[in-house]
Length: 284
Image 1 (spheres, rainbow, N blue to C red):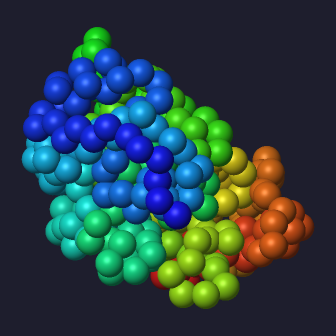
Image 2 (cartoon, rainbow, N blue to C red):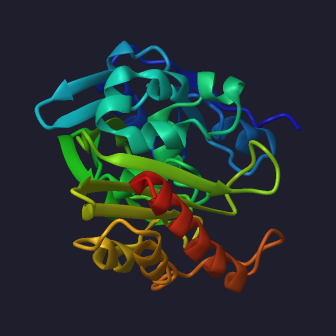
């Protein structure tokens, strides 16, 4: 299907992009890598009056250190994220999750910020961002503001971005020395997650000193499995302890029911995959 007609603008700076987007109004759409928006346009599930392309804004790409945090530009591709040495050293969970995103072609075009702003609860990068306590830096006509990941994802395909704002970068506190694993369950290779678990832990002397666990596709937004985290911290890194903690994984979740799985099956998967993810991360 051919998309509806729209105006197209490719700004060369963030300020220009914000100005154009604000002037265009609520019917404008931002395009980053295009891996989410283009299929929607082709199926005419969206009919924007203008598309604002961020592809020419070099300042939105790259990974850098800023004290105790990594800063990832919103237009940094999945390919660059998964191969960046700083990400692998200081945010290993994110690198592992990015390895599972779609296929090489999509990873070369799709962007980290685009995936987060799209806010698909089945997307593989939302739960890791939540588990890592990421902060989203967004720019509007009034300047920058920072939104914690826990407040950024508000509903299905919905974020805290206001009209006229764009996501410019993501700040991720370093988890240097932590171990991590992303356990994804899907029916066929390169498909969306039916359920997935993002887990990262810091083990000290055989004891789990810190733990963070995020769940993919277990609600209309990514979910932090806080009950699991609380059950793990201070406990020995053993298979028995991890299985007991993982039994709490589905608490507080509201998973969807669809052609892939019903609610009860997703809740069961959450427990099984959490046990696997944490055990792998902890080296058990």
